[in-house]
Length: 423
Image (cartoon, rainbow, N blue to C red; front, side):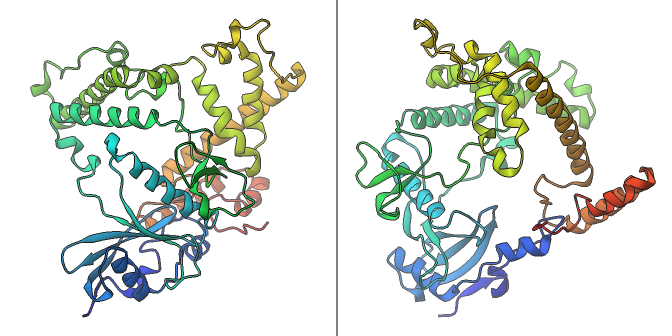
């Protein structure tokens, strides 16, 4: 029977909206994904015991940073998800292999109450009938928390927070022998270095498929839901202001948002202290921020930034005893010495450059916020033309304010314009 394809067939292979404020042609080419739609329907149907004739609808569901996601519907109402990585998603083979193994491993712990989708079929190679790597997986039922969060009652939010913390605790309890990505052994090259995982036949820890940890900012107590708010810090039960009914609509909205943040903070902390105390102790460790930064910035030199990691390492030498606190090493005799040391002149120079770099980064962040551009140039769907116009207007203002000798350099290196990436 005929299959309904929501949108033109060619749009299944391309992005629906421009997403980058510069070098958009290159970004679109990186994300253009030619594949055999007919074979994808067949593979998806056979993965769940149907035939291609049972497929009645296929539509693009989402376009993420690494995958294009499709919803494939069957005549009997069953729906499955197909995830196809962009050509630019790397490393090839390993990304899909690790993701699939993670899903299947977490399926193994379904008995602990962690809801994860079932993987029906996958390919780690584009040498197949579909013409690309893919995952065919279960479509999970339910609602996105973000879509209902603001309409939930306090009791409903508290219940959801407790459920999240319980799942976090269950995931924290799973012991793995190393940090990295996990794979089915059959998906790894024989010569690939790996660590076998006890109790998991055919599953190994291997090379990282990407940055599996990404810091989102200050990871000391500043990572708590409403850090810096006195009532939240003191774990005071939140209340709306007594004059709430006398406030205007904007003031009431702000008061409700503050109340929700305090409510979330209080109940998340309380639930974590009860169900996952190790997590609470880890993120409130006095040097957790530095530990996170050392891990995060370890790859920065590959992106041309040597200063940030070096500054972190210098701080590690200065706060070495604090880093070792709660580890038990300080009780050894003698406690281990820091393996790094720096001359004061080198320290001063590094911190000076770091301060200049931070200042430049802050200026760039202000510019991006004014224009509406993310760090990688991404713009919200539907805002592409608006952002481009803002960028041009901002550029004119900067050029007018600049010294004549600086204008040529600004023109050549304007950060929101197309550029030669091989330069």
